Length: 404
Image (cartoon, rainbow, N blue to C red):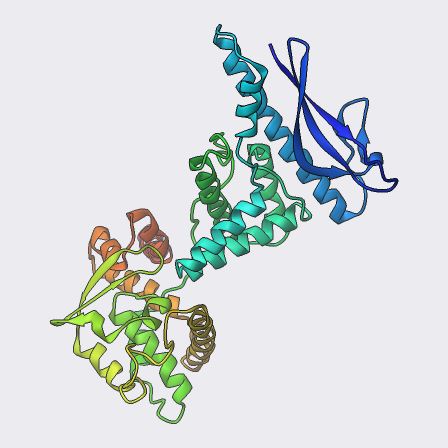
């Protein structure tokens, strides 16, 4: 059976890098397959036929990546040799070399994620691209910038990654978000044949946990809606966006920003959630129209309902991000004015709609449909604080009964 070994060919010029190559031997016939990996003579361990990881941080990262890619490529070559060995038919060395040279280039984890970021940006999925970017950044920080290939990722690494994030001060939900995103990217790599699915996320938490209270009462919603903010246009705009979100069953700010006048037809507002691409239909109410009318002059030459973005480019996405920051900053000021104990944000409108609906005994399945959730499990996260309040109320009644 054929064999493969990693070899090093030093440069004929002193101080220059040499080249690593694969030596393939079959029935005493020897041939070579070149690689793009170049190292210095003192970075080669001749005895163990391996790379020595040394140098500054940047050089170590490069050598580590070479080591990962070589390990992956040798595994692919040995699998080809093993497969051919199972076939009793004789084959020439040239046939084996041809298959080896057809092995696709080994893509590193960082390079793969960068490719997905570019793809999502081209698809104008700027939020997803940003999530991928943040996940790559935190993974690089965890590994001290050292790149790797997917075959080197295992469940132990994911456990260490999770523990590292939590010890670094990240909240459980933030760590879970990064792990979920990495799991998605890992799944893409599996689909593209870059690695086998080794179920490496089985020992880490990727689910959405309960969050702190983000809902306010119906009374607070009424107070916010009736506030006289005529002398504070920035606060008034923030309030109007908040109320519009509440009236539209908790529409997210990004969907509000890109909502078009053409989305309203025959008394029905139809839009696709930018997060999940789910199509939602909402009956157009006078409360919604009264808010939109206040900005009709500012948007008379725009296809959009609100004066936030002008198009769908990356520059417009940055306009949306800055607008969201301003609105949330002003909503917090409004919340402080009316004495709220939680920060008021656009997301509170979404949670509040769900919680108020729940308090009115509206079935969970309908609330989930209204929010555009794929499952009731996600909706349960929104209702966690309300359910806790209900349990506490029940407990007080029980204690009162016992201590009478």
